[in-house]
Length: 269
Image (cartoon, rainbow, N blue to C red; front, side, top):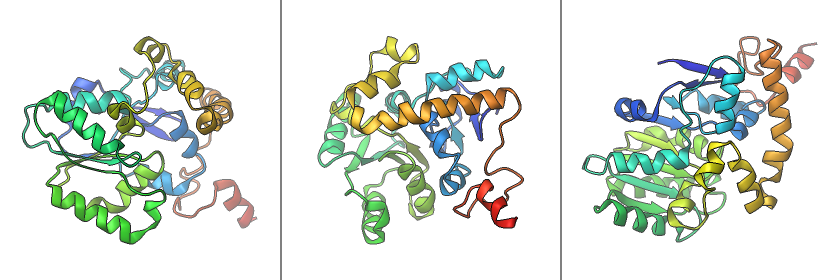
């Protein structure tokens, strides 16, 4: 499969249709600008990303950036578009049974109700909204794993935000008995429940969904878009000029240490 490198992430250059035909099992992440910036300083997140079977372009901005870098990506496949297309594609596939994990109390159950009504069968076999900080509570995580295993689900869709959802999948993937496909889907559960409205399609297509979401949730998203955004474009320019250095590249082999390459080099000196 062809891949497109943007900073230190190799994005699969694949169409949504081809992805559905190929994806029978594995872990699916959908990198966006926020992910790429976190991947410059979070070694655990970087390690987690190495577990992904598919890394799909979540952002129209990354779609445009790939063209700027001279390696165009075929299609934007954001998690919030991918998930409804996924369950529609598998509408009549009885082997696909999905568990929703994420969102606030009651929201995941509402999403389950809405999706099953649209599909006409119980394709969503379970839903659970974990407590805040659940990922740090081993006992709660064990109960969640048991709940999912008992549901008979073959697909786990986790929407608790990055990097929490990706780290949860990577850490516990081997403890799920029946799950064949793991999807990290961000705010998609809220969208499916009707709890949060998505940007109109035309706004998304011109690459301004980030602005729509910023205006809708300024307190939560201002740092992501107004602080990390400019830094991202600076790093992309450095990549274009062959000046970008992967902080977890070949010169820094141990990506498991919670230090950057720069700090590691300072320690050696």
